[in-house]
Picture 1 (cartoon, helix red, strand yellow):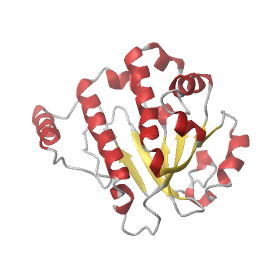
Picture 2: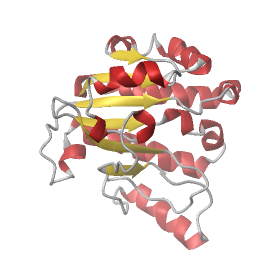
Picture 3: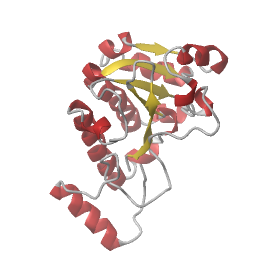
Picture 4: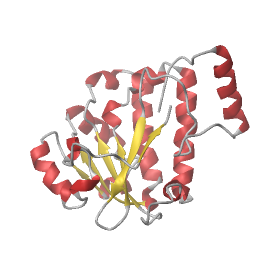
Length: 217
């Protein structure tokens, strides 16, 4: 997911036209591509768990929602891609894009990593609303999520999750929430997902490569 000012006015116009036409140039995840690297709002399809379900990582702690709500064009692109992602998961298109994979496409496992989330995000009301919407989106996909694991939940993340509970009660029942002590939650994560399917910061290997990185901007 790429962000910010486009390289030229012409490119900006072409992206705007693509959004309106519904036929944007897309990456291998079906996401409309922007042309700035100032901020990143990506998710990753890591691999599979022990049940052969795809594992999707949402590094929400690194998504600068304050910056995003202050950049309308990038927010529009992000919103479009977020909607497309949800539709593709519901229709099972998302995981079928990767034809060399033999995983099941009807259910996925979700990891939400809050590493990097700070108190600044909680002082801007539109940013809080967007952060809550990101969590609510997962609630709307509850029928397609086998389970979820939240890691690196600091006090700010816990505040956000508490606010989100009324919106995402069914999701919360299916999610394990872990704090910032990786020595505690990595062993729990490895009971669900093989080490070979995880990056180093989640208990995997240094040379790990995800199946796909999907840029929402």
